[in-house]
Amino acid sequence: MSNEQQETRRAKALKTSGEQRGSVAFHTLGCKVNQFDTGGLMAKFRERGYEIVGFDQPAAIYVINTCTVTQTAEQKARQLIRKVKREHPEAMVVVTGCYAQTNPEAVAALPEADLVVGVAGRGNLVDLIEQKISVESKNQVLPWGNCAQFEVFTPENTEKTRAFLKIEDGCRSFCSYCKIPFARGPVRSLPPLQVKDEIKRLLRSGFKELVLVGIHLGEYGTDLGRDLASLLAEIAHEGEDWGEEWRLRLGSLEPTDFSPALIEILFSSRLFCNHLHIPLQSGSSGVLSRMNRKYTPEDYAGLVSMLRQGIPDLSLTTDLMVGFPGETEEEFTETLHFIQAVSFSRIHIFPYSRREGTKAAQMKEQLPRKLKEERVRQAEKVAEKLARDYREKLLGKTVEVLIEEVEAGRYGEGFSREYVRVKVEGDWRPNTLVAAKVTSSVGEPLTGIAI
Image (cartoon, rainbow, N blue to C red; front, top):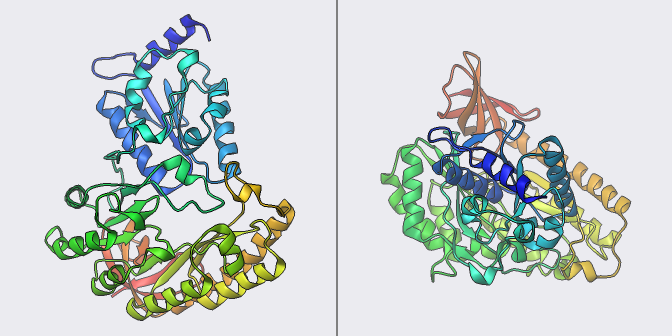
C-alpha cells in the first residue's frame, strides 16, 4: 500500500464532523469473555468520538476480535478478514484477539489485514489506529511479559436484563490440546473492591442477572492473594443491600476449582443460580491423563454427587471433546457411558482440533476427520436424550424466569435459574422476574404459567 493510500485511509478513519469521528464496526468470534472484551473496546471508541455501526454497514474501520480455540475458528477469522477488505477496500481492517496474539506473523501476512493487535495491550487500540501505521509496523502484537496486568474494560451493555462481568483473565493450566494460556497470558484478576463496585453499578443500571466470567474463573484472585470463594462470600453477604430481586450466575468452573469453601458458599446463598457449567472433556481416565486435565472420571462424579446434595434441581452443563489423539473405541464408549451416568442437562460437543505448538499436536495416532465427526454424531444423540430427560424433570415444577423478550399480551420469554428458556403466558415487561410453573416440557423453550 502506498503512503498516499495510507493517508487517505487514515484521514477517513479520523474524519471529523463536529465531535463525531469516523465509524467503527465490530465482529466477535469465540467465547463470552471475547464478547465482553469487544464491548469494552466499543466503549473506548465511543468515548473518543467514534460512531459504532453494525458490521454489515459501511464503516471506516472494521475491528475483528478473533478466537484460536480451533482451526475452524482461525479459518473463519481469515475468511472474514478477506471478505471485509473485498467489500470495503478503502476501510481499515484491524485484527485483534487470541488468534492475533498466538499467530501474529500469519495474520500480519494477510494483505487484507491493516493492523494486527493481540490481546496484550489492546486497551491502546484507539491510539494505535490514530497513529500513522506503515506496512512495516502493522504487527503491533506485544509479548505477555510486557503487559501482564488486568485490563479494565467497562462495556456498554445494550441489554437491560443480563450483564456479563469479566473478573479474571489468563490461564496457567496448560491442557495438552489448548493454546489459550499462550493467547491470554498469566492469571490476572480484577481487585475485589472493583468487582463489587462494578456489580453495584450494573444493578443501578437495572440489570437483574449478572454473570461472572473469566478465562479460568476458578483461578480468580491467585495473583492477589485471594480466591473466588472469599469474593463470592463477600458478594453474598453484602449483596442483599445492593438491590432487590437480582441473581448471580457463574461462568465455567473447572472440576479442580471446587474448594470446600466455594462449595459451602454455593450451598448457603440463594443469590447463586442453580446452574453450573463444569467442563468434562472426556469420561475416560486415559484420555483425561493425556489431556493433562488433572482429575479422573471418579473425581468428577464425586464432585457432582456432592453438589447435587446441596443445590436443589442443579442444572449441570458441560463441554465434551471427542476424537482426542489415541482415543480408542473403548475409551469413547467409556465417555458415552459416563455422560449418561452423570446425566447432564446440556452438553457442548466438539471434535478435537489439532493446534500447532501444543503437546497434543505432537502425539501419534491423530484420528481421521471422518471418525471424529462420527463420534460427535453419536455423542450428540446421547446428549439430546439427556436434555429431553432433564426438561421432563422440570414439568410441574416452579422456576424463576427473567423475561427478556415479549409478544405484547401473549407471553414473555427468558432464561430460568437453571439456564433453560421458558415461555410464560401473559402480558409481561422485559426485565421482570417471574415465578412460573412449567406446563409443557416438549422442546425448548418450555411453556409455563405464572403463579
